[in-house]
Every structure is written in C-alpha cells, then in structure tokens.
Image 1: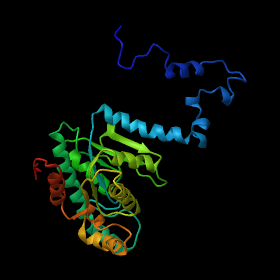
Image 2: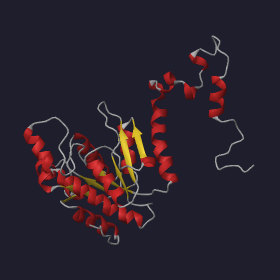
Image 3: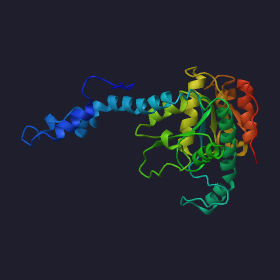
Image 4: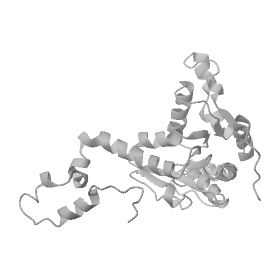
Length: 284
C-alpha cells in the first residue's frame, strides 16, 4: 500500500481517542485524570496552558498559508460600520453620525477597488504574492474581500471572537477564513507577510492596528513598506503626527512613514512604484 505524505507507523491521536471512548466505564476511567490531555478541556483551557494555546493559534493559519504557498499579502484595515453605497448604517447612533457614515460609504468603494488592483497583481503571480487580507468582518473588511472575489481571486479573513461578533463576511475564501481568540496572534498574521498596509477610516480597532504597524516600522522591527491612509479629510481631523515631531516625542521624518491618499488608483500607484510592479487594469 502506498504511504501518504503524513504517514506514520505510530498510532495516531485519533485512533487513541476512539479507543478511550470504547474503554469500559469505571471510577478510574471516569476520572478527569484519565482523560487524554488533548481531549481534556479543563486542562487545555487552564491558565497554565495559555502558552500552548497561543502557539496553536499561531500555527493553524501559518501551516495553511505555507501549504498554499502564500508568501506576501496586502492588508486592509478599516471600520466595520462603514456601509456599502446605497445601504444604511446598522449601528445605533446619532443622526449626525449616521449621515457621516453614509457619506463614508465612498471608502467602501475605494477599498473594494484597491483590493481589485492588489488581486489582479496577485493573479499574475499565481496568487502567491499580494494576496488581500482583511479582518474578515463587515464594512471596509467586507469591501476588501469583495473586491478580490469580483476579479476571481482568493482572499484571507482573520476574524476575532468578540462579545458582539458577527459572522465572517461572505466574500472571504472559505479555506482562508480563520478565527482567533488572541488579538496579539491575529496581529502577527496581519503583518508577517505584509507588502503594504492600507488603512481606511475606522474606530479604535483600526487605530490600534494602524499604530501597531507604524510602530514596528518606526522602530525598524519591520521592513519599511507602503503605509497608506485613505481619506485626507478624515485623517486630517483625527491625526496630527506633525505635533509629535514638534513636541520631540517622535523623530523628524517619522510622520513621513505613511502616505495619505484618497483613491484606490492613487494608493495602488504608491505600491506599484515602491515595488516596481507592472500596471494592471480594472474592467469597469
């Protein structure tokens, strides 16, 4: 009989789990101490096993992405509340905020088009490079995965479990839809393959992700890559990094580690110029 790539002459864990299920019930076999460690949830979920859980959460997507040969990604961060054009915001808020969110739907379209540029570039590289990755939720995240789907490309979604968690958006490639307990491990997967980071208007989560990436580049813990802020009118009101330079809390030039753009074409041209990539054309 031909042996598969993962063949082992040793009994597998699955075989032993099945054997234990068929063990006669006695006070000894019913004791928690007798459970195989890999099936003992009380043990696996204990504080002492947190390091193991962190490793498992890192390795599951890592192995899958390696198997598929995905070497680099283009990351899209942005607000979950930003609606698609022509739809209503779903979150309860003031009328002024609803009006602003509806106006911000243009960023949904820009994120969708930016993802199309990245995905058409990825197509020319057998989907091994410049694969779109988002946080997997609605809003800008949905727009990124949708843009990839619209040009027939795979895309990645890195969801995280929240008290009010929504289902993953329906545009993520199912085999590339991952779910995380630890924000920290999720952030590693956002950035460890990133060739570019595109940040669209969003809230605390978006700012957290953006500043994590910016700090890694500033401290040279990460190679310099295109860091794009989409929406000059939004970010001019939210951020003033020049003040940090004036106050001396960041070095001169640190505010130039990012580029503010308004359109998908403008943003992708920054990425193209940085990596000397060939032009791609979106079919209208």
